[in-house]
Image (cartoon, each protein chain N blue to C red):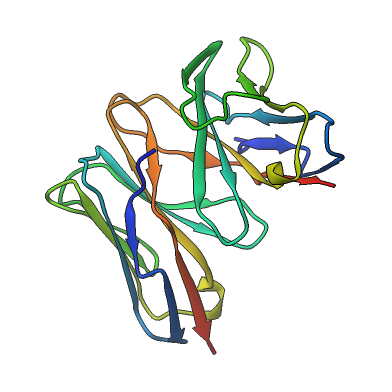
Length: 110
Length: 115
C-alpha cells in the first residue's frame, strides 16, 4: 500500500530545543493525523487535522494541514526527555483508508 | 469510554501452531484495522473490516492469514501454521465513521513470538 514520505528519519536534540518533522504524499487526504509511539506500546494519537490550512495545537505540539492537502508538519517546542519516541504521520482518504509515514525517531539529550 | 482492547498482549507459539489475536474496538466504532509492526519499523497495513464485512485485505498474505469482525464480539486475526517470520507486534485500531474524515485509535498490541 501507499506509504507517506516522512522526514527526518531520526533526530538527536538537546533538551529545550524545538523539533520539526514533516510528511508528504503524492495523494490528497481529508485528514492528517500525528501519533507518538513509545517502546512496547501502541501509537497514541496526538493531533488530528481536518481542513486544508488548519493549524492545531496540543500543549507544546503544533501541527498543520498543508494547503495542497498533500503534506503536514509537526512541531514540538521546548523539548523534554519524555518527548523521546517514534512519531508517525498518517493520512486518511475518502475511502476511510489510512496511510502511514515511515516514522521519525526522536532522542532528547538532557 | 474504554479504549481499543487487544488480547493477548503476548503470545508464544511453536512453528505450525495457530495464533488467534482478538480486538474489541472502542464503543461506537464499527471500523477495525489490523497492522503489523516489526522491531524498528513502521506500521504495515494488513486488513480493514466493518461489521461482518472485509473492506480491504490487500495487505494480508493470502495464505494462513484470515480476519473477521462478526456482528457480535471482537474482531479476530487468525494465523494458521505459524512460522518464525510471523513474529511481530500486531496492532488493532478502530475508527468511527465521520463521512470523509476519520480518526484512528490504536490498542496496545499483541506481540507474537514464534519459537
